[in-house]
Length: 348
Ligand code: F6P
Image 1: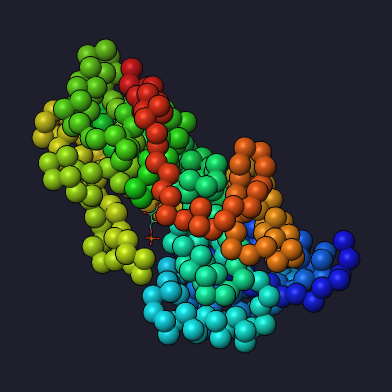
Image 2: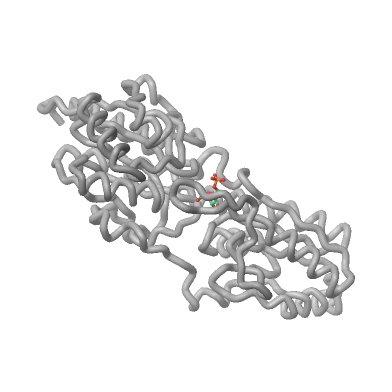
C-alpha cells in the first residue's frame, strides 16, 4: 500500500460511549497511515466539530488503545444540524481543518446527523455503534456484546444474593426502546423472567411465575427488565429525567423500582430492585467488539480513500459492507416476536 494521496480524515465519536470505540479509532489510524493518509481526532463528538477542536492522531497516539473502553476522543450528544447556523459552522470547520473525509462513529442520532451533513456537502462515512443494538442495518453494533457480557456477570451475582435471602430481585437494563440487551443479557445470565419493551408487561403473570417458583421450592426470582418497558396502567415509560437531549430523548429509568413496589404489594414477598446503569457501558471490550471495531475502522478508511461518501460500514453475516446512510438511520430494530419464547427459558 503506497502513500499516494495526501488526504486528511477527521474522526469523531458521538452519543453514548461504549466499549470498542477505541478499537475503531486505532484501526482507522493504522489503516490510514499505511495509505499515507493523515487522521485528525475531533474532540467530544459534534460539539468539538462545531468548535473546530481537533488534534492529529499518529500511530503512537493510538497504540494499544483497542482494548480500552470508552473513547479517547470524548463524546457528546450535540446535534450539529439543529440550526442552519450550526450546519454552516460545521461546513466552515471541515474546510478550516482541511478534512477530505469525516468518519462519524455513533448510533442512530450521530448517523442521522451525519446523513444530513452529507446532504449539505460534508464527505461523511458512518460507523455504527451502540450497546442497544437497535440499528437495523447492521447485524451487531460495536459495544453490544461487551454490554451483554457485563449484564450476564451482574445477573450471576444477583443470583447468589437473591437465593441466599429468598428474595425477588429486579434488575433494570439499558437499551432504550429495544429489548436486545435485556433479552440476551437475561438469557446468558439465567434471569427467570425477562421483560422487554416489545412485549406488553403483564404484572399478574410475573407474580404468578414468582409464586409458582416458590411452590416448586425455588423461593427466589431474578427479573431482567429493560428500561424501555412501559407501565401497563398508563402505557407510559418510566422516566429518570424528563428533560430532552438535543435529539429529543428523555432519560429512561425507574421501571425496576416500579416493579419492586408492585410485586411487593401484590405478593407480599421480599423484593429488591437494582439499576445496572452505566456499568453496562464501561470496561474493556470483549473479543467480538475489538475485532468488529478493527474491521469497521479499516473499511471506513477504504471508503474515504475511494471517496465513497454518504455510506456507513456495517456487519452483514460475516462481511463488512457499505450501506447508504439513508438506509441506516431511522430504522429502529426491535426484538421480533419469534424471539419472545426466550424471555422465559429459566422460569422454572
Ligand atoms: O444508547 C445507549 C444508552 O446507554 C441507552 O441504553 C440509555 O438509555 C442511554 O444511552 C443513556 O443516555 P445518557 O448517557 O445520555 O444518560
